[in-house]
Image (spheres, rainbow, N blue to C red):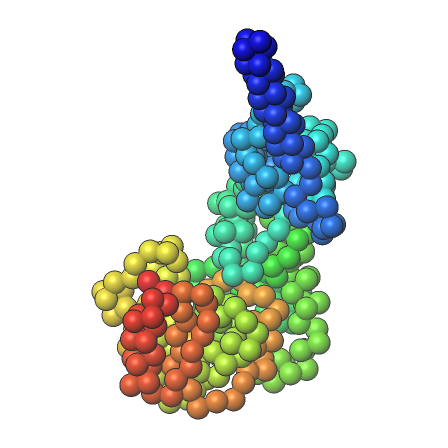
Length: 353
């Protein structure tokens, strides 16, 4: 009788365990969000490992578990996931996602590239190299080709001789509009990519053309590129431009750290030094020698929001701003108020560093 009771308990435990495992399986193969039909772009380059594919899907919140995704592939004998650019949704089941990646994109002759706002031409060159037969060096060299640049200046009204300044790192920095584009894989060239992004820039700037013809476009794009990295909210960006305009009018340097990062090719999460701040560079607005001056050119490719902020800035009497760790921006009128705000953020644990 006792043995029967023990056996029954064991069987009950096994049954309970099976129910839990089944529920866990169903949970992980189900859609992350069955109500979401928004397309999410996933780029799987050639040679990407299964581990990195799983991480990419998890980072984009398309699967619940990297480990379970890999287990599912093993259980279903799915050994090859094809390199391509996919549009997936959170409403897709794990089975649908795995099947899509196993079959590959429906149109293998087309490649989709997403160029992000706030990124530089060197970032774009790496993206292109990772997904096409064009090397990073080839793209950058093409973007610097004087013959091509002169042709582009003739073809696009918003490009001026300012981009030919020899101190500029990348002449087309700031002018390649960030967006998602489709290209035919065969015979894709650097010039085709450049002109496609410039075509989009031209379309986006068309409604501002009359206003831009009466001001220095290069300065506008340069200001837009700085505020792209300094602010997140539209209203903050417009106010940041007002601060920059006020400082320029008073002959002050802009004092923007993001320009120093660009000047010395440093990663944005690295530490800047006092030596860097005090070293002259035509991009480094922390240098006292850059007082009353903009950088020689843009430091990234800005969004339309930042371009609009530079064209239509707020009006204020602020001369300083600082952002906290949550990217909230605070504006002050003088150095004393600025230092008080910085100290307050530090005391409250909101300081960005």
